[in-house]
Length: 453
Length: 93
Image (cartoon, rainbow over all chains, first blue to last red; front, side, top):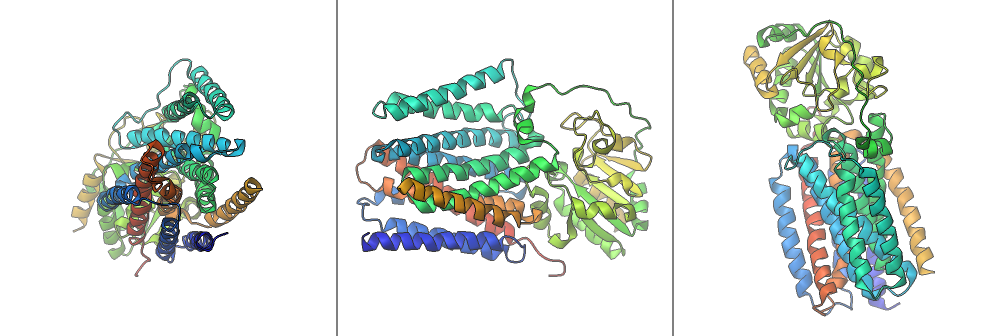
């Protein structure tokens, strides 16, 4: 090994160590920021090392790529609103996938043996699926296209045909790599497959999809690493791949569904058994709600996607402070799949300056729920639905939920009585101790704040 | 042999990844994801040599495109993660 090559390899080892150490520091909120910086330093070292490669004769293309990509990335990261993080992460996943596709495709001329050709195909396949899948996810999350599940007759047959087509073209490509037709077929079918995979998945299942695409973007980098024979791509790619898979598992577990159920349930119609719900919906005025809250000593706030939509995180924090000044203990109960991506609610509340040790996970808040005077549900529905415990025929039966109905009083902030995204009836709204606060969450909480001051 | 060696690296990294990520608390899952996103921009390293061949052929252009896309991930991913993590504060801190 030449000395310059050796230098590059050593730099990659250092970079890999920094990635691993950076991820380790992400294990606690106190050290996470330092971990991210370490990881960024690792990346810088890897890039500088790659730039010293003797094979590089022309730096113009590299520089052009850096400038364009860097400017876009820096601008996007500064301007993005915290409520729009899911869209941004989805889009970035897609870019990562496309980059791996391009690297795989550009590496073909150097591919001599069948093993390398297979890895080229894999990086194109995973990269392509990640790219278009992420674009569809982005469209659904940003509501540029409808967020609902898109299904049609014969979807499974079409998908099976695409898979068979991908396998056939991949085999033909490996047998006759000189003929570009098969390569184009693999690229085209992979891109199509990415779209087909994500369109049948509805908005509420997005935390799973976005985690899975995150994992794919890592695996695509991994495959590209095999294609260009570069071990730092393999190490970093598999770290990301593992991370995405774990998040996917956590999300699936939090919904009590298997991954295949999330991915393919759009194909099977949900059984429409009507659940008989007894009792009536009891609305409450902001003024009356204020009197209840003023007397409360222990309040739990359960946010959901509706809080993000209404951009209500800052007024929630304001209300939280007023309650605390009034001698009341306030905690937040965060369900793992509340929002549109893992940890979505935590970031929004952190943005509003809510300390992270006030944000309790579901398993922490549930045992305390019986001592809670008022549980305030803001724009959450399925994650507080008692039907998941009580109604065996409910589509979400068995899903772990936050048991707000055990609290003395429950306030539900909701736009109207129209049924939620999943179209599942929520018996919580009809319970004896539930009061509905209809209207925009931000305005309702603003009204409560005015009552306090 | 090369293939076996690379597969070895793959296996070990996946195990390390699982061990590390399992310890990340739910509070930090969004920053974890965007941080992982930035790391997946590592493809830039593979793209650099493809973009620097000076051939000015299709592969060269694809390499340059990959550098641009992966840089979006790297720069954007690390910056937005830092922006988010800066917001996480302890009670009274």
